Length: 253
Image (cartoon, rainbow, N blue to C red):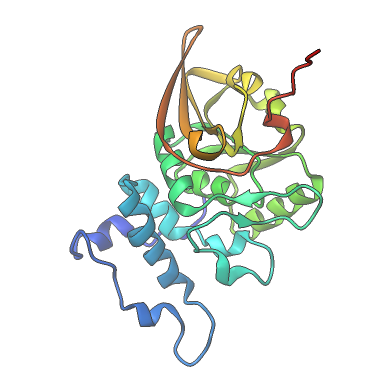
């Protein structure tokens, strides 16, 4: 597990519940245009996560600790804490790091416990995997782009994430050799039910994803109980759509 913890839960005891620590003018280092990333993380937690019903203290602590700026493309670190999906690939396969608000709610819905086995699908450069590792999970980060997978390994190694294994393969097929999983996060939108991924859930396992596109898109939680799979819509959400999870056109005369 990485060692970035700054004790967010303890720090919050001295704060008004609705306050944002520090003044907005301190977001940038004095006399430079470089972002103060420590302050940016705190502002992300207080003004994006907590206001979007992310209230799990271990998760808030993890996202306040993991340096999000280390998992973006070089030269784009100043964009890391914007409230939007961030492009993290420069190859043929476009991959995004989900916005803090959406990602935080999705991870919270999974209810991660220390020791859980987690599959992070479309892991990009590994940010969500690092958050899972900070929560004490054993993580498999799955990428279909070999160059992006290698970039994830480098980012995670630089961040001392020893509990993350990066695998390369078709996203829709998951990673059966490390299954079953207690939790699966799909970092892209899906138009079809991800059956192969659902088949890799352990008893009581949870899978969370964004189903659909546009105004019909919803964050959706699946839970395995025996041979049954429950499904529950959580909140309105949007995420980039990838070809492996799109609905195939039906043949018509």
